[in-house]
Length: 311
Length: 109
Image (cartoon, rainbow over all chains, first blue to last red; front, side):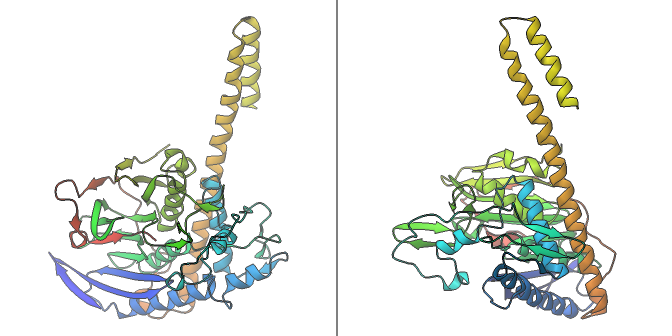
């Protein structure tokens, strides 16, 4: 743990690896109370998250759900609500955010933790079809989930944001804080400066540089892009953001997209949708009043902002 | 119902003005726009309700098994809604600032 004083406000920071990335937490006024319990809570919750949502663990609840496609499975409340939210995000994005892209990811070689992906000499000859969410049935009365045959879920596009949201809610009695799960973050209260949180946006070309910044007074911020999770297949560079319309890596001419939203999970879903839409503003139509503004960095280095949509 | 009324009205107007049949084209955009607004409203309701249920559930879970009661608040949130936020470029002058300038950072996930 690191504790530093900035102005009149002290901030304690803690980080640890989880979910194939790094969890980073900052809490304000740490001189007045011991944050050790908060750190334990964060690590316990992260362990539970992996046990529920990891598609790389055969014993995770998500893996068991995927293996049982074709028959209804009684789900934990945690998995049920996450799938419910993912389906809502799919509908809001008109299918651009799609949790059923897993076969396409596997076809591209993303079948293990990202750190263990090897380059392969050839690419799958045909893109895997993305079946879409039609046919997935959630029954709230029995809390069961039914996946049609051939449909499997990858919730990697939403569960980091959800973790940040849920942990932030749990830590909300701290006067200010930030939970970042692999860069998808949720802030509340004021940061060290006393005026919200100054959020830097990582430059897609250089992780040591911020390309932009925004002062956020509460809510989530998420970035989707290709600069971290990319690998080679044959003579082609591929990445993890699959366009459901093609089953192939998408996001024409876009390098990264950053979205501010009411929550981290909403921002994460909206950022994926906006990225796959090539930065087209219409991708956010289903999120009116819930997200905005957004920052789009195009492959040629052009940076443009998309204003908050209120109506 | 409103869409049907608009369709009839526009069709009638078109019939009264031979040669301006293209106005019929207005029918589709009107109905499609109404449908899109309904879709947006539904999607937003779905998201808000799903997230509310999700976070509410986790509050209850923590109440049952608190790792440290001082670090947990149930049914209380200090998280505020987003205030107006704008992005500001930081690489205009010197090609980029170091990451140490910001208090927290969003990164590609």
